[in-house]
Image 1 (cartoon, one colour):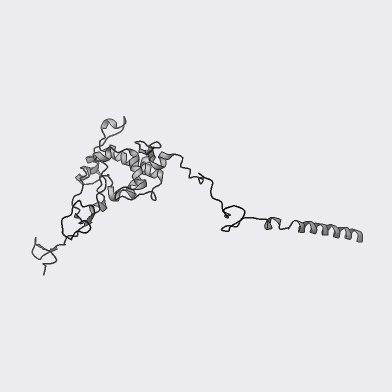
Image 2 (image 1 turned 45 degrees about the horizontal axis):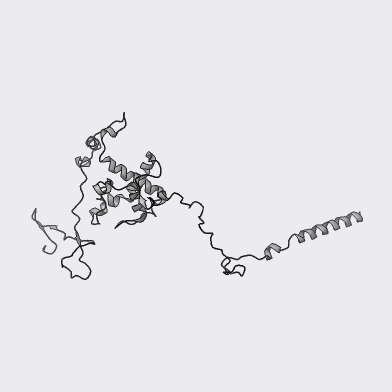
Length: 260
């Protein structure tokens, strides 16, 4: 019994020794780079190494230049980088109605709500100039901005910018569409009849004129006295008009300055 106990004790001690030997701190104590600290291992003294040239983060290769820039060899093209499916056009319509209609309006005539309130007129997609522009021009403008329009790259992904460009082209084509463009078997309805059925005003099916009553006047160039004639005005500014108040007598009005 005593001999068995001695053997057991010896085996236990041996196991403890092996366990302690396995807890050595060799890897803990080995040389290593600590973030934000220098080192004498590299000639430039930096432990953090610069990325290898042309390194690209996963998912950010952007190998398709046209998809991300709208340019091929620095020139705009009249083509989508992917098929213009119904889903693409529906997505483009949704994004257009959210981000573009305040300036360009739902029909794309450049007479959006903020333009009607005095902001600089936006581009009319249906004039000869815009009709002649290639499709990727709209993508390029949304990506980089143009004139008074800021870029929308933060609001719209590249795919959404292309979808909006495709929908703008659909808006343009809709104004020159003919019954022969409709697929065989599809029903064609008169827009005036649809407006009547929906209880909309007759003007719903009429033309889309540009608003001219914006009360916008030009600021004089810097350095000119107020009220002096301005040459080549560039910056529009809203000029508030005096309100009118109705007098007791029907049909007469008076400005706030003259009303007693």
